[in-house]
Amino acid sequence: MSNLSMEARIELETRDLKPKEVKELFLDNCRASSIEGLTDQFEELELLSMINLGLTSLKGFPNFPKLKSLEISDNKLTGDLEYLKGCPNIASLKICNNRIADIAALEPLKILANLTSLDLIECPIAEGDKYRETVFGALPQLTFLDGIDREGNAEPDSDEDYELDEEDEDVDSEEEGDEEEDEEEDEEDEDDEEGEVCCSRLEYHIFLKFYSLFKFKTLYLTILKRYMAYFSGRRREGGSNR
Image 1 (cartoon, rainbow, N blue to C red):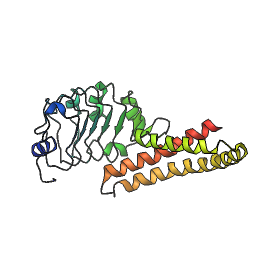
Image 2 (image 1 turned 30 degrees about the vertical axis):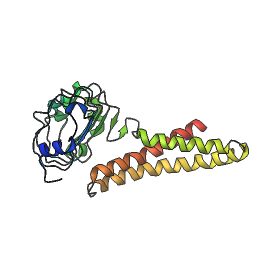
Image 3 (image 1 turned 90 degrees about the horizontal axis):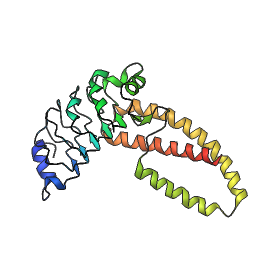
Image 4 (image 1 turned 60 degrees about the vertical axis):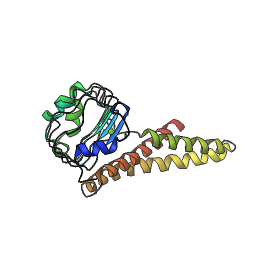
């Protein structure tokens, strides 16, 4: 599918569906330097992924009033984010491994009041001094930048967290019968959690260093964010047990 044009890929992905019936659209790895074949007719679209297309411009990006998640990582964009103004409900925007070099390129995102999560890993701007402070200052509506909030907590993955919570509840119900054993285990867990959280933060920075060497960058980022979310959940659980 990597040799398909964007227009041909859209036709392939939406076959047997009317534009108004499409809520998710994955156009990853097709070939396009600009927006082609994507129109306002996809008015119900909530998730759009355009990873590694070769995009150099977002000019002509349609108005998608219900779009919540946009993934445009691994392209050649230097800006043009003003063309997203017709998508006021975007909450998650991933622009990793593009050519965003300064805060001015992000200024158009101020109008996206619902934007809570922005990923810029492997963009030139992410290498600058006071990068996080600058981006959070320019875009006060953000909660997470590169999967981490202002306090250093990882962005949760809803599905992963749900599975972890279910497992924790099952374990708790099985252990309720022996209070003394629980107390001993809690003390051991607290010590382990402190070490694990510390290690996870160190490993997080190590992972970022290896990110540029990883072939499937988006998959790598997803794994990394789930990893950090797990340890943040462990830390929160440890705090509540205390």
